[in-house]
Image (cartoon, rainbow, N blue to C red; front, top):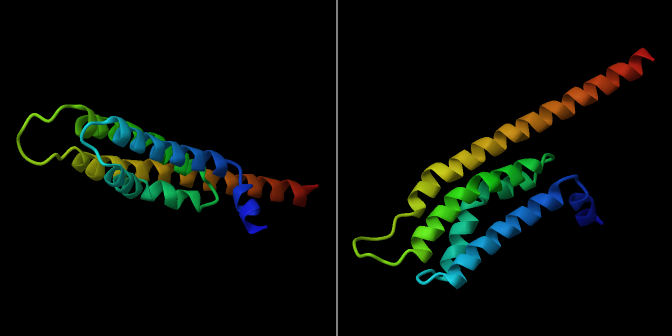
Length: 136
């Protein structure tokens, strides 16, 4: 079955569990918070997890795990501002602006670094194995 082959890549299940945990964290704030709707929390979580979801499709899914973990502090901060802290008046809530401006690009950048390191290690191992096979 193709799905079992896709899931058999080392680390892909872990990456999917971490992505699911991020969605659960978003929905927990929506359910426990005073001013957050579950739909909007799910939407912002989906938008913020686009880099991680893209990294899951690669041959180095550890990048998706790292991208999610890098994003967690930003999401926790924004969720605490949006959902937990009582409204104190003023304009529109803008806590997700830093998440989208800094958290998502940082998540994508760090995930990309992990992806490149994963590919470099894989190609160097393949080169070493090929070199060893041709010498012997």
